[in-house]
Length: 82
Image (cartoon, rainbow, N blue to C red; front, top):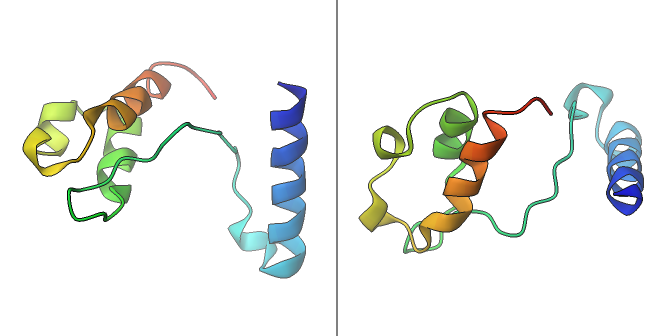
């Protein structure tokens, strides 16, 4: 957990100084994998909708993604406070 905290702190510092303070995230969450379509595109909007509490079946067609497990893991984050 300490490594994750130090990574998040360092990432925020780099973004603040190398990009802009406006783009510094509130939270940094390390995940095992990001969900992708079968053609390799990241599912950014569906992840956002799932984090906001939308049901997985309403967000994306399961046949369109290569592995449903990474997207399902984001549903767990929507039920807890980060």
